Length: 231
Figure 1 (cartoon, rainbow, N blue to C red):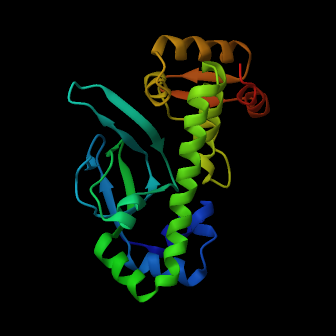
Figure 2: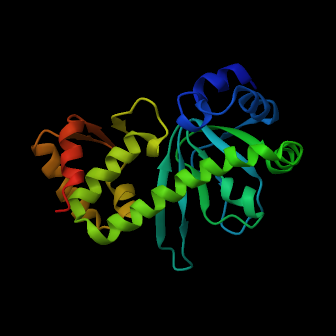
């Protein structure tokens, strides 16, 4: 059932939504509706027409792409209260990546046409949406820099912290990550063997605890020290 007040409470844990003017929050929630995806269900694929803006309310979304040869590039695994889909809102071009539900997932959906109509009436609020996209762009530049400058260990440590903090969105970090070693390997373009070796070393050092399909961060300050060291 659609429940704007419940949505507001969940989304207010994210920095972008929480910092919006109250009237903008109200307008976005008035346009929104909920969508539920089954585990593995596709929301959209690369090349699909733009369909609107989304936020994760429950569950997680897997964002990436698969080549014709079947090779997967996993960009990120996002959880509440992460927003996504804003690129196609700005340029009206087809989707750049695939988005699949990692498990049963509840989304907030603001349809493209309704959002564009509202923005046409209130053009001053394009900046609010631009801030969402600029935050993602900063993250992309950081990731590209790390790809070239950091050794594998610091890259793993940094990505674990980013996921725990919702890529800068969560106001309270979530230290239990529903994340497999294979997924982490795909995100960082490292072999699963390398990821396994790094995580095992972190576990032996008491920094993380490994479980089936999950990583529990035990010592975040020490992980930050490792992430800050270029290796």
